[in-house]
Image (cartoon, rainbow, N blue to C red; front, side, top):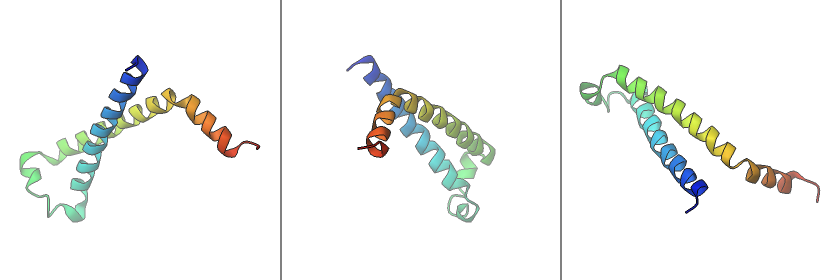
Length: 86
């Protein structure tokens, strides 16, 4: 695997992890669903869940940005082939 391939792999792994953290903590934080997840707050305080949600969302945003930068040539090529003159 090339260095760029390894970098893509680790960025994608980071995206999966941060997405799952943000998604799960976001679902737990939905007020209508707290009655189903009430026991979670006995183990992990709501403020901690909010911090995990916020930080994982920010890290995911940075990983998405780096993913787009790494794939910018492919994105430009696909955009030109899709919307360019034929």
